[in-house]
Amino acid sequence: MHTLLLLPWMTPHKVIPWQRAIVLSFLGKVEVVVEYDEVIRSPSVAMRAPAVVRMRRVEMPRRGTTRFCRDNVFRRDGFACQYCGAVLRPRELTFDHVIPRARGGRTDWENIVTCCRPCNDRKRDRTPDEAGMKLARRPTRASLIPARTWGMLVEHPPAEWRAFVA
Image (cartoon, rainbow, N blue to C red):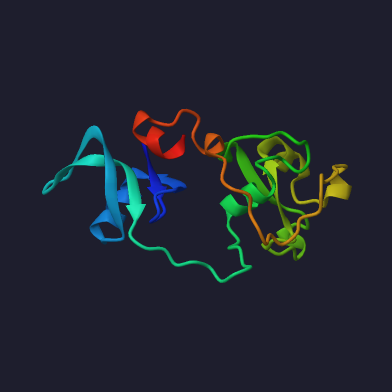
């Protein structure tokens, strides 16, 4: 079970585990907009599981900067393996160091690409040339990330989300 996290202006931001949504709610960082029918119980509290929550406020990143993280790498690369071109869901993807870490490769925008598990296993700790693999394109620093594709994140969005992701 997952929870849809909305920005303060009610647009989808990302999907988070329901446990994280409960923590954010208790911290006062989000408000619950829609709940599932399922009840979550602890020794002292019983509550319905949050289906959709909205951030109370958001800190905007400095203009022109995009945070380096797994999700943004996948979005930059269009959820496609940069070796075989397969477009997959995030849970089926990894990221790959073009120059392996064992050889001094850094974990940054210019050395990380989206990769499927079979290609990552095939490449191992070699460079693409050594592995006989060709990159679809060289990785670059992301300045603007394309809008999130909700179908890539959740195969069948719950009915409780329909009003927000349609």
